[in-house]
Length: 318
Image (cartoon, rainbow, N blue to C red; front, side, top):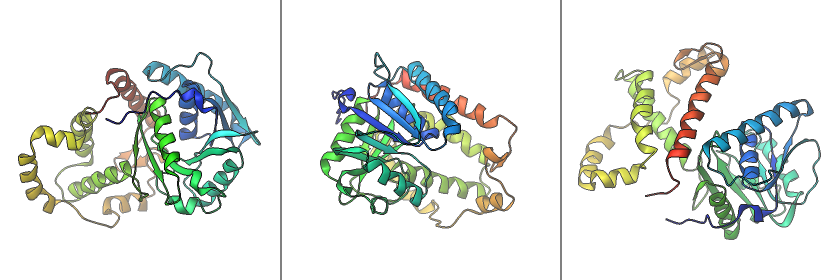
């Protein structure tokens, strides 16, 4: 196992996180709790108090999960408007909009020191396109966190064709130092690794339901009570090694030809969108109508399980 954790996170100096949404507050909390002096920059002054409360809540979750270094003094400032650099690291975490991200990245680059790093938390936008307006694209990389950022251990690190190898190495070392488990992609690709895996499973899930084999609820139960619980302990390749590659090969030969290879939007999703469904945030989704507070209850259940896993399972790989 390649483990870079001996690095001291506090040696990084100061960090800037741009964007005070769900992801930005989680990233800022995680950096600050691990001893990095952090500034969280938000766009709307009216959201300042709410953002400060969200950051405090995420710091409490980190303490409950006991996954961080717990710096003696946490330095985290939430600011609206202009901020003063220079910073050693700037992380952009605004909405998945190319124009908004490029503007935020340009602003971030002006605030980092000459050998600093500018990172984007994008989950799908091409890095080469995001870097078009940057003066130093070689010091730019993708650093993709997962919601909730303060609890999910995985981060994905990826560079464009112009990114320096040392930038990726420094982000990897920092990730280990703040309690994350990073994977470094060998090249940029749409969706990176985790989203491609997730959407491959979703494609097959839609296919099973549309074929009348099971319900949406059955799919969710199969993942939560079966695959998700097992994969939290042992990844898919290690699981196949444990099962035996002779058995794995037999199943591959039989099952792979049966799996969906559709490249169109599933009919179930089309129908849901045609009736105006937006998911829990709109009160109606793939699984029907949701009552008030459903999103909060789902989030609380998810975070409680992630906290339990973080405390119970040591951060080692097979």
